[in-house]
Amino acid sequence: MRAAAIDAFGPAENLTVRDLPRPVAAPGEVLVRVRTAGVQLTDAAIRGGWTPPGATIEFPQVLGNEFAGTVAEVGAGVTGFSVGDGVAGYRVLGCYAEYVNVPAEQVVPKPAEVSWLTAGALSASGQTAHTALERLRVGEGETLLVHGAAGGVGTVAVQLAAARGARVVGTASPANHAYVRSLGAVPVEYGEGQLQRIRAAAPQGVDAALDAAGHDNLRTAVELVEDRSRIGTIVDIALVKELGCQWISSDRSAARLRELLDLCAKGRLTITIRETFPLNEVWKAHLDVETGHGRGKIALVVGSGERTDSDGTP
Image (cartoon, rainbow, N blue to C red; front, side, top):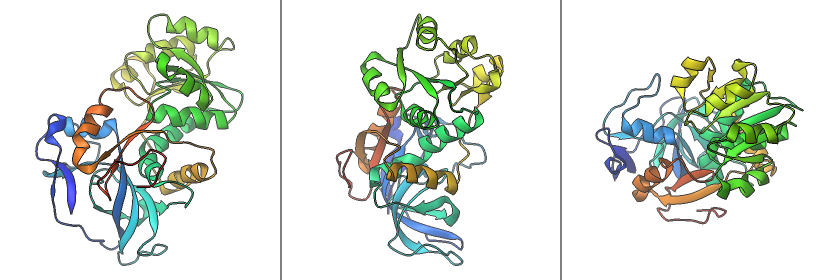
């Protein structure tokens, strides 16, 4: 099979496509023919030398942690899946490939109403945002501040919080203000003076805050939220330790992914795909995601190896 892997830690150019042995479905697993895969900043961090907790890096290491595709093999003991079923799923590594073997409990059926691009790019950001709102205890009538509201996690967090009946204030660059407003948040510009701008946008106060942007934004959050256990970040672990806030890592599960896919199928959650890349241009996708700018998600089109419209089916 074709897969994108690294032979050493380093820059985006270290990530290259090569032929690797096709995996098989071991007992309890399914083998999925990948059609689309999401690209995360986490993937770039692993490429640069970071190892996720509990993971082992073995070169050549295939990257990628979320995917959608069709079941190609069903391992012994697996029920509920058949060859040809459309699915979405997740695993720590190995998804930038034409085939991925994964425990059956990490795969769920893809609703027909959900595009392959959405299904492949949903799990990581979607489950992280869902986990964050759960841990920050965001409820109806409260006000949530989202730093980085136009990004992959921020886009989902704004929509999920608004669906819970929360008021949302989201920081973003001016070019993304109309987009953030369309998601259900009051947009506020980044940079000097943002504390005063947030207070003006939320005169009733801020109950909880999610930092999906970094750049010392937690310092703004602690000025606004009284209970620091209701301030979380997915990017700035150093400030978490200094300020006594929450470090939020995704608590991924099939149940959580199934709920998010159902929301997408019902039109209550939208995943914005700002750019797609074929598998052989995965290094360009990493350069893009590392800028820290742009709306929504980046996705790889693996099955066809060709670009596709963000609202189309590859």
